[in-house]
Length: 487
Image (cartoon, rainbow, N blue to C red; front, side, top):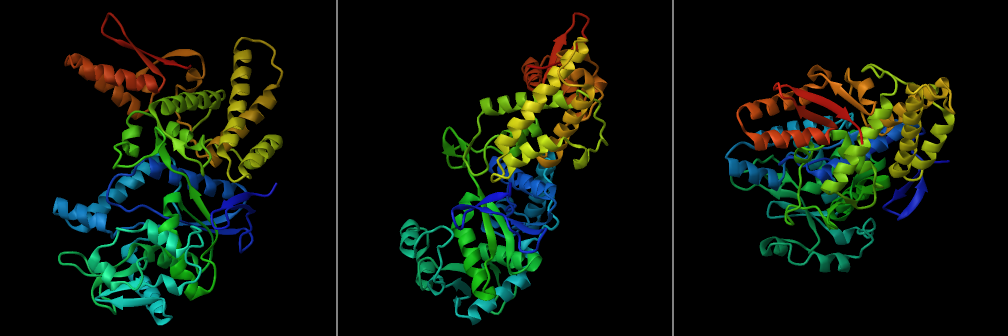
């Protein structure tokens, strides 16, 4: 079965046919670094990480680029509020972003171009648009003339009249007077007092948001790419504007396939700061394991809305423990490597059938949970010295395939600890040294809280450890027994 993807441009499922054989160029719209990443970011970058991993699994050489927007109104506002340089804000949140992505086991792209490092490329692109009559200068600003591009709106499938009615009230009067059409958008913004600025043919200023991605796509991947990815909220205006900025110059499609992921919702509403249902990745990972969050995200098809509630996270944490227990049926050292050629071909075919249907990770996970059930059953039969319906050799083959697909393709990385074999059993009393540094630190903090009679904090940590599958039982002699248990 050929891999088919849903192309937002055509609103259809289409077979993936790269322009250059087994090479795929893939651009993902990155973060604007002014704050900590939220659950919407987690979903976006986990989804495209799995897309990349699966393409590589199929044998493609993926050239993956993701930009960093490090000049923006929100960044400048935060810098002014804290009375620091813009770079202090951007470096802080770039570091935080890298930490969050690392915890979620997201592969870094081959290139991370920054907007501030691509200003000359943006100026050149704007000049070309101006020369061809698609851009015009106005009081130090430069705007894109949407009426000059006949197919403007083809990605969002809306007319100028429809877009204009939806955009009423968004533009300040002074700016509206400079524009030839209400939907014209800024390619270059004239410098304001106290803000960073770069020299340009139109005077000192800085680029508009949309021109950044067009310039960085051209600079890193060429005039026409295979796949352009992002959240569905970027279809209009950002991706629509990228197309309008690029295609008049190249006379080529900016991207052959446009892929967009759905929103994260809370109680049926899109997660947002204005609704008060906003949660950062860091906040969630203070209470749940990173791979539990990754699992939750992959349990929904990437194009559909994803409901995120404490109950859903708790269920995902339980599911993650189930996968862990099956991974630890056999010894799993940290340097363990499985080659695709060592996997069960029938299972691979089932997995590929699921993933080839527009990256259907829920169906792929159903296969993996089925394998986990088989492995757990085989392990129980072996421990109770009962005959199993599969041989040791078959069990190991299933296990290798399970570990390979779970870790390498879906990116659900199993932790490594000397307690692995024990955790695979129904219940086990473990020593403190059996666990990761993070778990050890939590257990020590709880002990300190109890000694200082801060019982509310001790109970909070106990509950946090319980969510990670650990039961703490305080003994009469003052010691604490640690039990690892499964559902």
